Image (cartoon, rainbow, N blue to C red):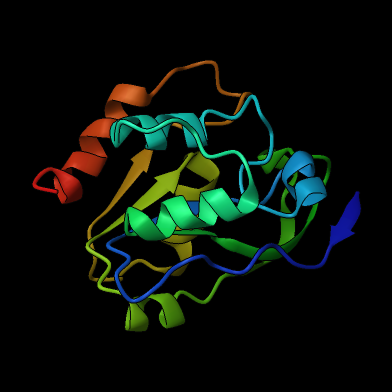
Length: 161
């Protein structure tokens, strides 16, 4: 086990309408110091395809994409002990305090990227008052392609855009 002290800061601004919460950064994400850094993870491909764009490549391009598309991005686990990238090994964790994002952005929907993010979110935010949905993990560890489900969820907020 390695004691990983901190995940990443949230990416959001005053126009963010959807908050996407993962569990905790993978080893590859921690190496590149930004969300969904594993090129086999389907996150950037799935979300950018919804908007008819190519996946952003650099960290700056990813941040620009999130701001242009009014998406906030964070992980529900702020710090934890984790073995490699395995969500199943997460223990002794602290939960991200969503208050700052929710008080400073007009979030209409919270998307939980995978079952571990959902499990921790439900346990710690059972009465959040904002609609939320569990979507299939975009991780390469999940062989299921959930692109259609992701696009359907994004359409709940962005359909008229």
